[in-house]
Amino acid sequence: MWIFLIVVVGVLLYGVSLYNGLIAGRNGYKNAFAQIDVQLTRRYDLIPNLVETVKAYMKHERETLDAVVQARNSAMSGLSAAKANPGDAAAMQQLAGADNALTQTLGRLFALSEAYPDLKANQNMMQLSEELSSTENKVAFARQAYNDAVMSYNISREQFPGSIVANMFAFQPAEQLAIESETKREVPKVSFS
Image 1 (cartoon, rainbow, N blue to C red):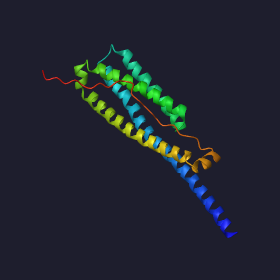
Image 2 (image 1 turned 135 degrees about the horizontal axis):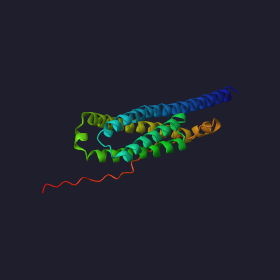
Image 3 (image 1 turned 30 degrees about the horizontal axis):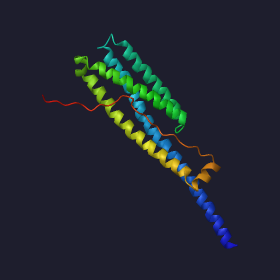
Image 4 (image 1 turned 45 degrees about the vertical axis):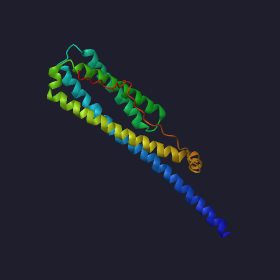
């Protein structure tokens, strides 16, 4: 009788431990997403300043500037949706798509700025470009930490016996955030002739 009671208590304690591990994993990936939120918000806040700096030099490039502002607003909406439910597949896909579009329009903006030597030399433009570049790196690190936390949570959720506890308490799988630049990177050609 005592052995049976000890086994039952042991199984219950193990089940509680698995449940608490799943809760910790879910909270971990939500915290990691909060770090992405901080960096993406910083990125989105820098863009209006960048656009205003460029506007003074590129009066006739209105279409590109409008596209950047529209892409930024779309990305902000995607971030709000993802923030409401981190890990949700549809929200992560919406955010990834909006952020990819923003990255592409920013690339067009920087390509246009190459045609304006005064703009390239402008101190504001150089500072904003540097801050945006630094923020891009921080976003990449935060996204990696989030994806690692999601992977760890999903593994805990899917492995036996954690899967039993996860199914009993309806722990849903979390979606990773895969933001890929659709621009192709080419190897620079170096020639000394």
